[in-house]
Image 1 (tube, one colour):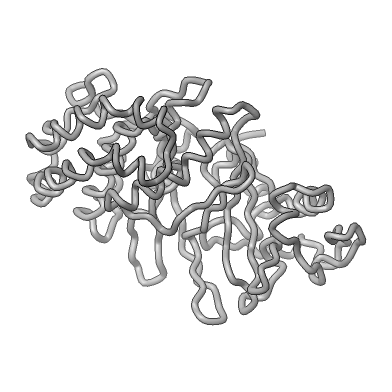
Image 2: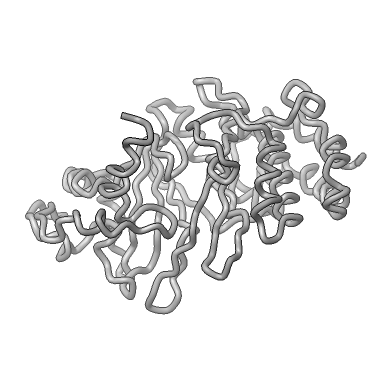
Length: 341
């Protein structure tokens, strides 16, 4: 059952290799390293001797890969630790290009860390949303937002490079990962949180609050303009490093969620004196915060030029014409608002 009574049982069984840098030794010790798991050819081998799967097996979700993933509890649907409801799988890529469960490889053999996402449902729109996420991340990079690395789409699978760890020589450095929901001290899963409360949390804990608040507001502008309505506070996080640095993580889960057939609306909104029918008044936002962050107004005025060029950026990123046309009114209106700050 959900609740505090479940916290300890969850920690000691399900946190051997979670995102971020938390590791619980009891959970690691419960893993059966000699358990027999299916190899690509259908034979069974001890987990720690598994040769891994090639990309074709992963994308095709071959019978043996699906069973392997199930045995390792690699699939996550609706799990808060990987931020969202789309089916996902967390994998390590070996330097030889094979894919493995996390914990199988020695750190010196790891060549990459991946989050693989599948469409939320089986409709054409579900596939379009996930495919467009790769293009949207390209656009975000061109907008000057903090983007970790390009995403790529292949056969209904989105490959997302993970930013919560970094390969350094023959070892892996693990960053602490914390959602803004947690940072703001909110315990109710999926609850609505005012944007002002999230900005306040960033101001309290970021080691560079001005840069991170400016970045956060730019991301909200991009969300509004491009229709990323699924802006709950678990879709933004901070990274905490061992040197004491706490900064906004790179952008993630940035997609045209206005297309979702479930009709997803913005969860995190500004107060009523700022939010006008889903359109934040950016001049009021600036007035509220520029006393603390004097670079905010100039940064958003400069951002206006990039926003005004969004239609071309979307074309360059290969985004569908239907999406570009649907966002054109928002693009023009918000570019004008920002230019007039």
